[in-house]
Amino acid sequence: MHVVTNTVRRGDREYRSTLLRRSFREDGKVKKETLANLSHLPEEAIELIRGALSGRRYVEAETAFEIERSLPAGHVQAALVMARRLELGRVLDRAPSRARDLCVAMICQRAIAPASKLQTVRALGQSTLAAELGIEGVDEDDLYAALDWLVERQAGIEDRLARRHFSEGELVLYDVSSSYFEGRSCPLAKLGYSRDGRRGTPQIVYGLLCDRPGRPIAVEVFSGQLHDDKTLPSQIAKLTTRFGLARVVVVSDRGMVTKANLEHMRQTDGIGWITALKAPQIKKLARTGALQLSLFDETNLAEITAPEDFPGERLIVCRNPLVAAERTRKRAELLAATERSLAEIADRVKRGTLAGADRIGLAAGPAVKRYRMNKHFELAITDTSFAFARKREQIETEAALDGVYVLRTSVPAQTLLTAEVVRAYKGLEQVERAFGSFKGPDLQIRPIHHHLETRVRAHVLLCMLAYYLTWHLKAAWTPLLFADEQRPVSADPVAKATRSPAAQRKAATKRTPTGQPCHSYHSLLDELATLTRNTIRLPDAPATFDRLTQPTELQARALDLAATAPVTT
Image (cartoon, rainbow, N blue to C red):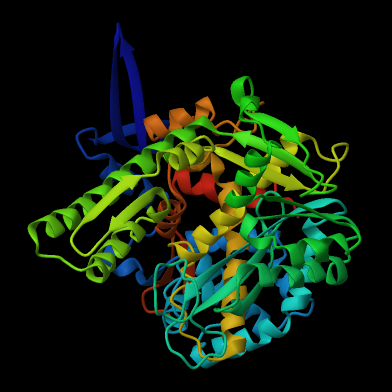
């Protein structure tokens, strides 16, 4: 017996019938007989009959197999594929070891879902990551021991990354940030300027070296009370001595460059720099006539010299009209807010509820300092009166420099054109993005709970390596993210950066050019996590086998990009 499906076309209509038939031989001839018309049965029932007649064995779905466990696997697979492409294990140490596997696991887990070490132990067992790296059953002590192993190899790790990404004449981006600390027993945790807005909380400072595209190469942790400029000399020594770079250009923020640091870089062979002048230095240039504001009548970019104050340096003067308008608006709001506070004090004095020059001064001081507008107001205080007025000439002088910034560099024009100096300084945005990932949901470096100095250094190093992995994953997944795949390079380096038409379409439609939904980095990881590995047991059998769920089109594309997208190593 067998099942036959016949299709007959009559005019424009098509008729389909499914018949159960048998074949037999009679008088030496093969004959066929229809036993039943199955056309009215559901397609599933027809297939069951067809399979049974062909010798297949069927059992009830409930007893066919048991899914013992389902673990998220897609996001782990993507992270491990990229880690292996980057040879992350060999970056940590040449020799395979359990400690190396544990560190790779912590790096991948932080890139996927950052958490404390205790939560990391739990998370390793809640995905396929532990099984993939053969580290099932680890506990917190294992992870802390691996951190100790990692920090001992920090110099070697940074050396290998520097050989991979730094070359002679390289532009090196350097900046510092800080994160607050829980507890007071660590010698690195000190009170200082908090970039997290957590006054009175101990903190640590860390400096990050990146290559021009923004990949992190080295990180160093400093005491929380150390000023930014004090961190630069050690980075110069690292670049020249440890990394062996004969020629390098350090791009750093204006707060990093002091007279001592500039003198140190001048005396170090092969070191050039790009930084910016501070506001008082710009005002002095304008006051002495070296900076003529009429330069900006026709252009927003010019190169000047000031041999007396900046011998042997190029000064690139830029004016951004958008920044100028924003600063003008903000100053007007702050002046108005300060005037309202001072007017309230004047009204109290007039009504007699506030008297005495000392008491009036105590009330007026905080009012003018609250928005840092004390330099723009003149106060007249007696025991019975209070008056204030704006210093209009001073305000106009400051407003004339709105949007103006001056870059300074020791790199000659034949090595780096004026526009390229501006673009190089703007590249510090890449380090700021790194700090944003460090402190944001990507890596969650803070708050820091470790008490041992070595553990704090290891924690920061681990976050840097996780950002290295995250950076490459985001670069590979650019076609699926809201990120700009081909960010246009403006002919005017001072002008506001613009997005490509393709990126604008993605932002407007929330779709990629292929019609798939656009994602953020984390939403794409969440999507990948729905690709699970299922452990299946057959009935009445001790054996089990694993099987991945069928990936969706988006999951398949993301995994393919992680495995094949160009990676500069």
